[in-house]
Length: 115
Length: 113
Image 1 (tube, chains in turn cyan, brown):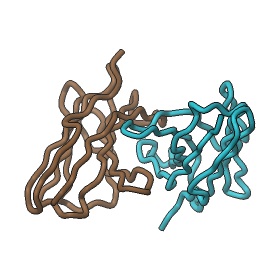
Image 2 (cartoon, rainbow over the protein chains, first blue to last red; image 1 turned 120 degrees about the vertical axis):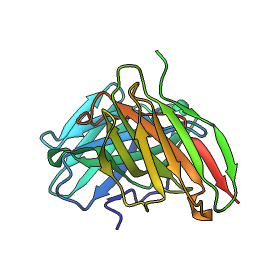
Image 3 (tube, rainbow over the protein chains, first blue to last red; image 1 turned 60 degrees about the vertical axis):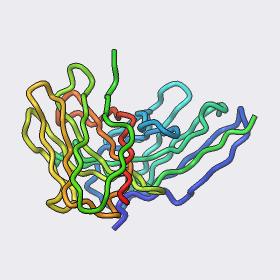
Image 4 (tube, chains in turn green, purple; image 1 turned 135 degrees about the vertical axis):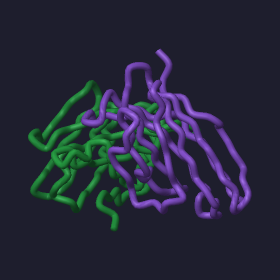
């Protein structure tokens, strides 16, 4: 039962353009969402998060949008840089139910930013 | 400041053996979580420990166990290894058990032959 889904295994974008990575979830009890970036041979690196009481959160070039009615979130990277090339994971948790320590991850999307 | 550290980096074991993986959290972090990542999948939650107590457990068999020490470091133990246990094992730390941003170590690559 895949509660968090990233349906695009890969995405290729030109340097300087916008990258949009998508994530869908099925469990309406999820109330906190996170994005991680992973380079080969390294652990995932925390990027940005959003609570279900918000619909947008920005941090520099990274913006996460949350659409609760559609159970969908997206990560926008503007402008994209070659160093952004990595695998991106979205994750969700049920913090209200004291399960903040249990992150449920999607399968990942491999982003390639071409110079 | 040092990030999350894990040892060993790589490990090769034979079916039926036992393995112990180690993790040291970021200084000041009191919660440690363990995840298993198989190729092509996202990390899957195994355990969370806070103040030496288990706070959460994922859908893994009893062959998997863990503990946390007074200095907040942690061990993950896997008994009676199966070929399917081959994976990257990730440790993550957070300030406490209700802080949702977790910071991951580089992982231990376990190969079971």
